Length: 100
Image (cartoon, rainbow, N blue to C red):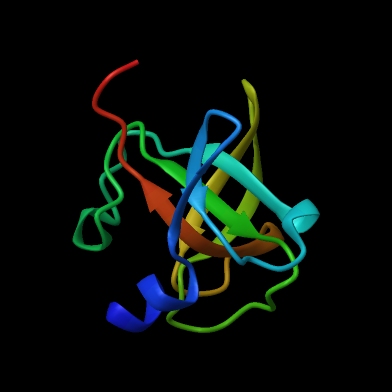
């Protein structure tokens, strides 16, 4: 954990709180976790913001993100294994929100 903090120290710039020194920020997308509670062991709970690095390849056992089609439109699904849906990228980090 200490290495992650050194590699990507917290930053506050132009009113935005985040982590610095990530490359290719244009390839990072963000989605909101729903209440399926599959990844609470990783700290991803309902309404967590999940940042996804689109340029990272699929990796078995990692938090991979897939785009799935539903009756209500498009949704994103986290999975540690391959899913029969469009691969988007890997979860880079998540942030839990307590206040709106």
